[in-house]
Image (cartoon, rainbow, N blue to C red; front, side):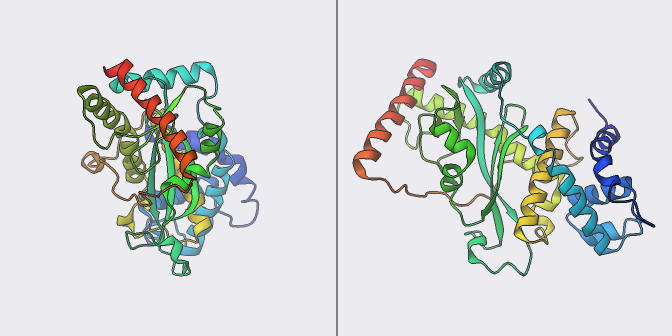
Length: 319
């Protein structure tokens, strides 16, 4: 288990060359100051609080630090946020998910969450979901450890979760059977697919009830992971008042903090003190209940195959 100081030093080594290239001028900020100021902003969501921390920075300087460090982190997104690719990686995740509650072949746990934004220039009503505040609708996939393996941060808050999935790279790959027999677990806000299993809305048998219990237990990992992510980086949480940035900058910060979250999880960093009670099912979801627009014969054929796939798993595993 790495200490927080060790994680910060690892991060500094990762970004030092990128940050140093921008400091070759008189009175430029050091890489260390840029990184620490940005981490403080990510942790609090407040430019003013960073200004008062004693770094000797103005609000504008803090914003520049956040912008620079965020962009430097984004260059490493593909290294730190990625779905299992090798056979060994796939087996490790599937075995880890199976150990939770017995559902086999699970490659990822899917959730949608709202990242509040508080930029007054946002006038597009598409960013205001049913919760009543401007936000970005972010799709998150995690593995059995709570490591974020896929992230989609680009859609306005009112966008339906099923639309985000259908228009994501991973959704398209799943449709093309890129993941073989692997499964993703999601709540009822998404349509049932042969590769995307949701809980049963009206379980009848003992096996169906057992499946629902196992589904909830397994998907609890992603809900807790999202809670921990927002707890570590309060800038993402509505309690901080929302990201005071334009939507595209808010999306960039979202991805950057996901990279840091993964570094913390893999390094064994503890949950911030006093935060355990706050790590619970995320309550900032929206975009539920979208009705798919398909011709009836096509929808009926798909639905039959999807139900058959789920019932086969339930009978074989929980029957």
